[in-house]
Figure (cartoon, rainbow, N blue to C red):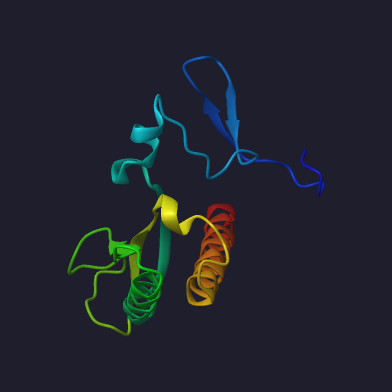
Length: 138
């Protein structure tokens, strides 16, 4: 049980026989700092959201990165380009995206626009997990 009294979801046991649960989330590890900071090891989270919001969020974060002198990168990439989760294409439909968080965007207060986009994306992730739990119980 966690501190809120809710039961943690158990995700199995790893090779070292340690239990993996929801208590540990969004942690990066690597053998060296160079490997840890390599784009291949960016935090990557799945999120289902409106396609037009993904375009808006990518544009807003790119503008903030340019203002801060950082290299511009998309933070939301479609899982399957040109095809979304429910099988329809277009800006008005929902899509399954990978939310990539590079090391230079992990810190809050770099730019308020980035912080606000991240807050909205975290809300979408929470809603996605609640919807998933409801569908599993039905």
